[in-house]
Length: 216
Image 1 (cartoon, rainbow, N blue to C red):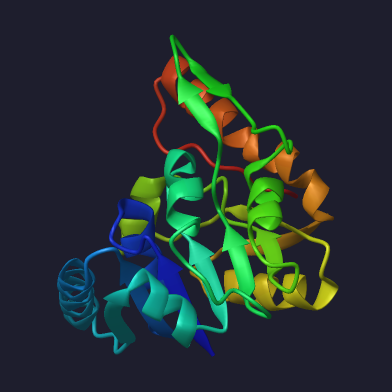
Image 2 (image 1 turned 30 degrees about the vertical axis):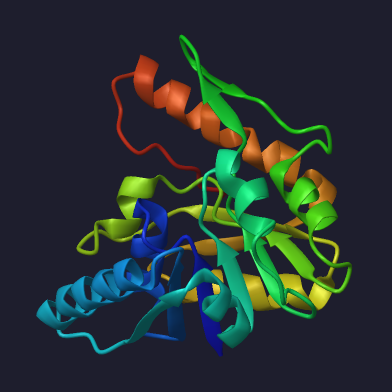
């Protein structure tokens, strides 16, 4: 299985690529292919130091979509519309949104689009054949790149496509100690996305770092 990461040179994208590439063929996308290639060189070096082999290659965002079975949109909410407007080929692809629409005021605030969630907005923007899931929304960006630390979190996964949801949950469960949970249809994504500003506020007001969630 090939996983393409659109926006794979940001903190979340880089960390996801390094976490996933020992198990899957990972294609890191960027607006600038040189930047994606440099990210992959760094990622391969980091994994090699830890005795891990991987499949990690840098390309453009469009090439990452074209090559992938699963596409992860590792881009900030404010760049989603502009980025997706330049891309195509999402038909019959599983598209994963870890995107959280929020703003930092005197505290972090959930600011959903008119559709109610980033995931539903993305579904509206992409072809109807795209198989949209939301996942990974509540994992702190810093944790993805902390390769010597285990990720011991719960990951809610939402989708209207039962088979796509199963595939994404299987990917989640390959990463460190993450545990995927079926959170229901894509309409539930708004609840999941709103957890991230809540977690950031808890971290800030309680002098904690990288707060996550676990279900027992």
